[in-house]
Each structure stands twice: as structure tokens, then as C-alpha cells.
Image (cartoon, rainbow, N blue to C red; front, top):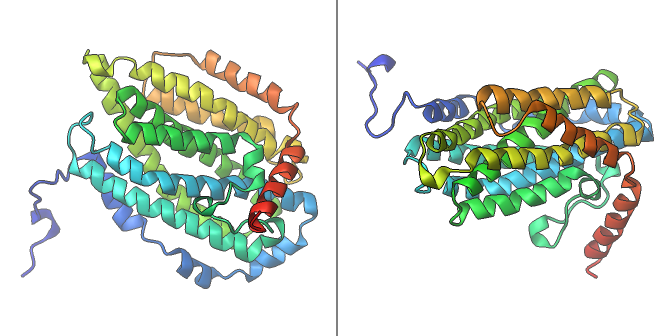
Length: 343
């Protein structure tokens, strides 16, 4: 007779560890197949809805999806660095942490795959210059380059490289803050809020289903990142010399990133006329609440204040209102065209 599950024991692996629990959830819930989802749901209904939209509505969707596909591509590239970082001597050695990081790498690659397939089969008229991978001489999508998200993803690559290649605890804290709080915790989750609003006017069934799977995966990634940051904070609060400055590093990176995030929120709403009624103010308030929950409730940061954080967002909002996004998009369209032509 097979042993019942409550009799199964592990040796080296701590099955009560939070990282192990996250890994196990990835095994159970993160096994959805992007290609099979495409075949099961089909593109037809989404294409019909897409073709019924006017150009301004399509443009708003294109601005949202551009930063998602470039964001997922960037985090998929950086996942290997996270795997290296969490196995560094700055953390208590944890096979469970490394196990989850390996699951995160697979999931980020799958998110990239989903958006690539969707964009190419439904929204291709808004992305005539897309095919060049950033590792094969390409650049980010021109719409991504035009807004704060593009700068944030480029910053992410630098921070993750510093953290993985001999970085100290403050380097690791900055990288984890940018990736797990900024990109996944605020930018992506704010994007889900915008998507839900836009779906009320333009119900794209397949896109919505993919977003549901992706947001579930990202929830685990955010929890993982906050656990990693808590480990660093605890060592700083215990007085370990090498970890001093971790909280300040988290706060400084969060304040820097909120500028990019606020600019992106304006880019996908007010700057295009918000035809699908996302509401810029509600989107910014949503992001502020998410940031507060993570930094002040979960991490209990003492380094900054909610007032200071909101002022940084307000300053970014003012700057965004004077931005000529269309000119930047046109500039990068020309750059992309030249690259496609081999010039």
C-alpha cells in the first residue's frame, strides 16, 4: 500500500519553509500552457473585438500591452540573475529559495511567450515593427521607450546584474525593490487594474484569461520578493554590520521607481485621451495603496513616509503632463525601421 501524503517526509528540504510553499504552489498552479491556452480559447473573438475598436481605443491597448511584453521580456532575462543572487553568501543558504527562483524563471518566460503570441496574432496592426529581439540587435517597443516603464526596465537590468555579480546587501535590496515592488508589485498590478477597466468597454476574452494566469503567478513572485527583503531587513535590525543601509536602499529605490511608474500611468491614460475610461487618478491611487501595503505594512519600513512617497508621485505627474510621447515614439519608430532594414 502507498504511504499517505501525511506520512511523506523530506530530508534536506524544509517543507514548512515559506519559499518551499511558494515553490509548491508554482508546481500546482503555474503549469498552465500558453500555446494550449491559445488553441483552447482561440483568437477569433478577440480579433473581432479588436477590429471593432477605433484607433484611439486600439492605441490605449497598445500602450498598455507594449510595456507588459517588454516588461515580461526583461524580467525573463533577469530571472537567471535572481537565481544567482538568492544563492549568494548574503543569505542563509536555502535550497527552497533556489527552488522557487527556478520556478519564477520558467513562469516569466511563459508570460513573455503568451504576450508574444497574442500581440502577433491579434494586435499586429499596432506593432508593425516588433520582431527584433533585444538580444538580436533590437530595442524595446517604441511605445515602451517613450514612457517611464522603458527606463525602469533598463534600470532593472543594471540593478540585477550588480546584485548577482558580487553585489552587497544594499545592491540586492535595490534590485529586489525595483523588480518585486516596483515592476511586479505596482507597475504590473496597476496594469491589471487598467486592463479590468478597459475590458468593460473592449472584452478581449483570450487576453483576459492570459492576464488571470499571469497575475496569479506574479502574486507568488511578489511574496517571494518581500520575503527576500525581510531577510535583509532583519539582519540590518539585528545590527549585522554588512547589512546596514538596507532600509534606506529600499526606500531610495522605491522613490526613484514611483516616478517611472507615474509617468507610465499618465502615458496609458490621459496622454491618449483615456477612451476606455481607466481614470488616471484612480490608477495612481491604486498604485499608492499597493506601495503602502508592501512598504509600510509588510516590510514596516522606517526609512521614509507615505507623504514623501506621494510627493514624489505628484512631482512625476507634473513632469508627465509636459511630455511629448508621440515625438519619442516617432523617433524610436525610425530607429526600429533602420534596424529592421539592417542599416
